[in-house]
Image (cartoon, rainbow, N blue to C red; front, top):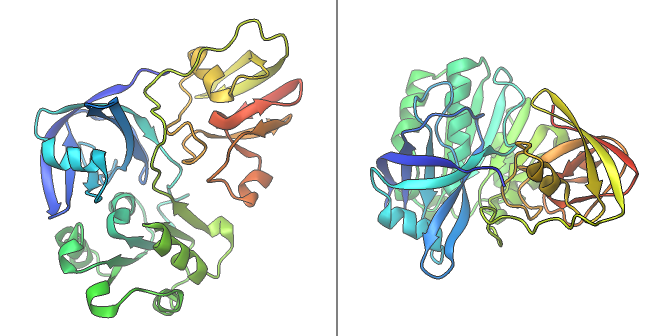
Length: 332
């Protein structure tokens, strides 16, 4: 696997009674809306891996930060909230994810619930600082005490009243939101793109409420990893007689590789020293998504790409096996 990066906590910010943000000393390039995969120590398994969205903005914040919300049975989130302090060091995979707006200059409708505000906050700060787009945020929470970034959102709306509108929905006051509620609140707006992030029930309601083409609606699914991407993949058998040839363009470099029939594409790239992005290795997060330019592959599992993505040639490298003799892949 690619070498993890080392991140040291410089500050822990209490956001709500159940959520905190970790600010890291080390700076690195990333895009608004992306996430990090952290290695959390465990007495039982040695470590577990979990994905946490970056709440910071690469255009505004000098240091990257993630936000972690406790879940009742969540080992990693509780470990972080109970143990992380300045000086705590984590191993992490590099920034990943495709939950990023195409442009910071287009109008965005942002729908978030609970900790789903985390990548949305990164997008808001980045757009206000470096773009020209208008922003409307519908943010649902259990009650007022659960509103992550409450004061910062208020300050941003006061600073940018002509560009940022925030609509709060509190379950304790208004009950659970329905698709009809979301549709009524968002109907006056005609955004270039819609970004939706939160628990599955909220995302389902929000997506149902959006009468827009799939190409304009982006969903961020929080993934509970079943495996540990920090563990090396099983080595490929070198005597695999059936193999294809794959040509890949990554970071401006073109490589041609022999692709054994039973080797997953991501494993092939990592074994050959290519810095291909990935996170879950389970076909559930889209961090390893790339474009199939020519040829044919077979995906073993796909929990994130929709038919429209597949029609455009998007595949998951971590789940792809070769079918045709020659294949071309691009990350550009």
